[in-house]
Amino acid sequence: FIAVRKTYATAYESFSGDVSISLEAFPQAITAFVDENSENGKRAQAIAAGLFDLVETPEQVLSGRINDPSRKHPGDVCVVSLNDDAVFEKAMEVRDKPVKESDAFVFAGACLRFGITDVAILMVSSRQPKLDENALSAWAEKRGISFRLYYGWEDIMSEALFWGATPMRPAVSLVISLIENRLREVEISNEGYDLWRQTFRA
Image (cartoon, rainbow, N blue to C red; front, side, top):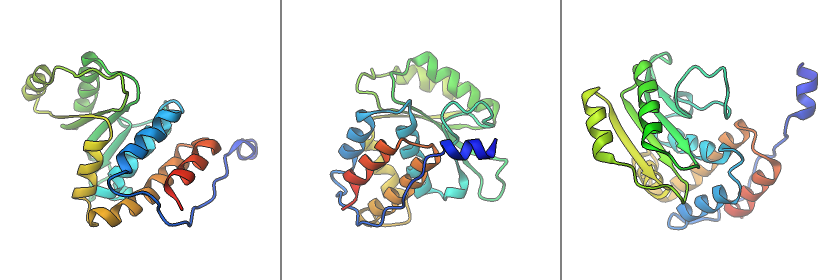
């Protein structure tokens, strides 16, 4: 199995060029990169995980392969406790297709079964309608859940860059490297990986 798997494994190089994108242009560049080809959600999930890596630590951030049936946590990206990796602290679902309110309820319910009360959904589809946040908030309040809804990349990227330990402008270079690690982890296509280099590296 291992020998056969290696013949199909994608090989990636590590990029050494300087980052060529500014803080102001970063959200738009990320949007264009994901919109060019979602790769069944791989690109969006890897970027979200990289943003979490910036705020937390990569050791705390769990992000499995797309549609991994053996996954032991809800959501595409989860944060575990620094002191106990069996304790989940946050969970995020990342969707590049439109999300319905029923999807949000189902995801939050799954998180609650894992004891996760800080729940977020990142919706990056250009066709995403606004959800009824009052209804979602009322439902979440009754169950002791904190719900965050992000539409597109700009708000979540601004939060991650602001709350990370590194000042925002140099943090762009750091998070690009973190995202590259996550792109390799989800086994993005060679074409996608090369586009990332062309877009973000000098």
